[in-house]
Amino acid sequence: MSSSAVVAEDIDVDFLPVIYQYLRCLEKEQTELGRVSQESSQKVLELQRKIQTAREQVRKLPGVEYSREEQLRRLEALRKQLALKKRLLLKYKSKSEVTH
Image 1 (cartoon, rainbow, N blue to C red):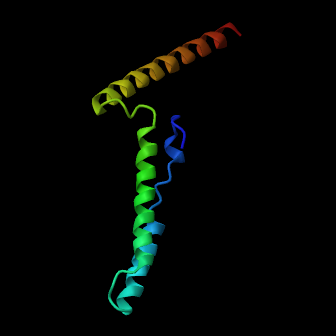
Image 2 (cartoon, rainbow, N blue to C red; image 1 turned 120 degrees about the vertical axis):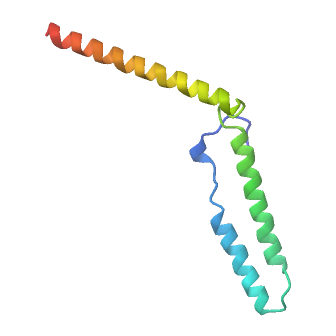
Image 3 (cartoon, rainbow, N blue to C red; image 1 turned 135 degrees about the horizontal axis):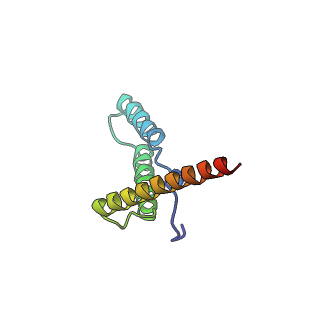
């Protein structure tokens, strides 16, 4: 995977199918000899790889390098900027309506 930033929507965090497959393997093995088979071990490794990949991708998300407090400060600043821009748009829109 490249070192470029990723978007949260692109990260595959759908672990349930792998967990379900693992549990099915365990159920099947319990009916056999009550031992953990190679198939279930492979499912655990698959889950571990998937979790590790998700961790690596999350580390590449923009803004993750900032502390929680810094992220909250930045979010508040962006909200203020958005509110200001909305007010300005309304102001200019009302001025253009008056001139027409």
